[in-house]
Length: 138
Image (cartoon, rainbow, N blue to C red; front, side):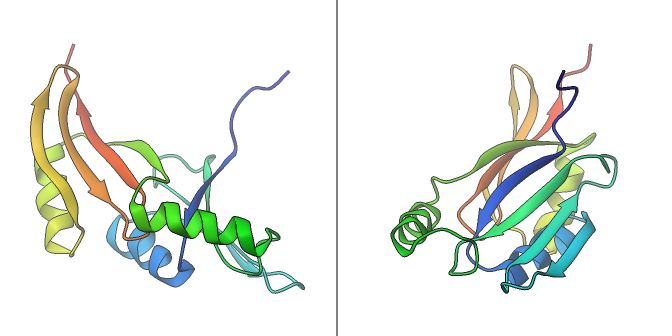
């Protein structure tokens, strides 16, 4: 029986820039950062309150085991900003928006009331975007 998801990948075009975004700006914790014998860098991070979910910052380059055509396709999707999407929880969307904006994080939209809570759309600089959501109370 499967009981939980332990790892999920976010494709990135530059692991160092992704590290800066997820760790320095968002405050995620580094779980693993090692370079394997084949040159592949296994870099995983996790949100501070979710240590059992490792997010793999998966590079789109020659060390990832994909062929050149696949890497080009992934790079194109990242460049178009249509690759990844997800949702991040925050207890205070407006305050987190101001904090992250001051750190240089780019947003596609400012905090806005939605039927499910308050949401801002955040981008990671690698072509991925996320809903940063403060769920509606009650």
